[in-house]
Structure formats: structure tokens, C-alpha cells
Length: 66
Image (cartoon, rainbow, N blue to C red; front, side):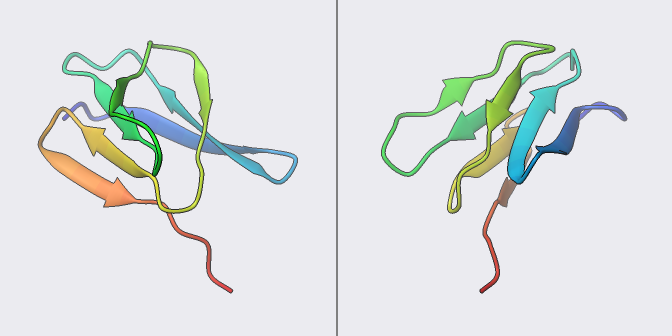
């Protein structure tokens, strides 16, 4: 996992994920889709319940508190 691997930002109220050009990549898995390797320096919308995998070593699930 890179020291500067991904960045999560808000575009209005939409959470966005960006791979910062990490050496081993980032995978995003949405609830109704197969895992997707992210292209560096492109923004991807995070949806509740999606899973983000950093270099296939560390994963986290994005959820929204009610």
C-alpha cells in the first residue's frame, strides 16, 4: 500500500474516490457489479455498501450512518 494511495473527497454531497497513481492499484466493488480496477487520477462515486481494496492487502467498506 502506498503512503499516498487514495483520496476521498466530496463533490457537493457525493463522496468521490481517486487512486493517486499507486503502484499496486485500487479496486472498487459496488453492490451490484463485479470488482473494478480504478484508473489513476480519475474520480469514482462511492455508493453505500461498496468495498474499496488497496493493493489487494487492505479493504474497507463505505457506509452511511443514519
